[in-house]
Image (cartoon, rainbow, N blue to C red; front, side, top):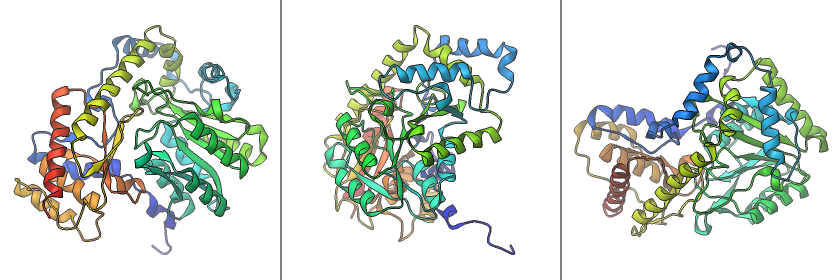
Length: 434
């Protein structure tokens, strides 16, 4: 082309969670089944949507009004309903005007970072969720700025690390919190959240809190919404129904603005996000209509409790299976759909391998391996080619740690036992191979 087409930040767009699927699909002809432990889609793991919920959605499809545009910010009745749910939590008070719908949280996340100045940075956790870290880095034309989550302290954030990075990087304007966390499954204690808000207050920052898993906690672990502890600091909560109903294909998420009137620059950001949605006319309407209808149903709370209990039971069982392995460290999760498993220092080395029984898989694997490949990604590729199990390397979550993330979504007990016992066998064989 006569001129360069892309800015440097385009190189930061990377989504290994789905990227590894391309490799797994190449292996499909050589395995009876690929075990997809890479992505948090309950439907793909045969989670059944209750019949009553399907009937509620089907009823909406029979109404002509369902097929028209919604208000650009989202349906007023649904925004009023959601604002009331937030206000009941006794924290920041919002109105329907403080809520805007997007076509999934990926849409909202992309727009938040897109309209910030390239020199304005948002610091986020590491290991990082790729949608946030990639979008933030792409807007800044630079690698993400992160604070550390500590695997030796329940994956809680290193607050000294966060404080010092904020203090000595004046370009940081916001702090990202993902609570419950993806990829670690950690649920933030209230005291830590309040200390993070105090840092934001001291340095005049705003908070972004991704709460897509807010209502998916277990093992008697409570979660705290941003509205409860934000105080007078400007903040944006990101919410949705993709995991909770679960309805990931709905592409329905929304943002809630807190304390937007306290800072002119933050208010301009909120207004810019609203203006961006005005340009698109409206977000997906059917799920917006369904939200109050489903959440107000007397069966919804019992459904959520049962769903969470099943995830919690799997988290406990996976911890039991993994606990004998000496070369890894992990924490039993209390929220979201994931466990992040870290190899202990020195466990991974160049030259380690698994036995590959299928020549076609061996040939593909040889094409994927190279000297610069992170050691955990090398293990992940071997696991895929040898066992047909697809996980995500931790190094792809903007982290210097080496390990991999699995889901807690396998709905068939026999398959869950097979997947994780096979992972253990693979770890032990791999670590002992060199």
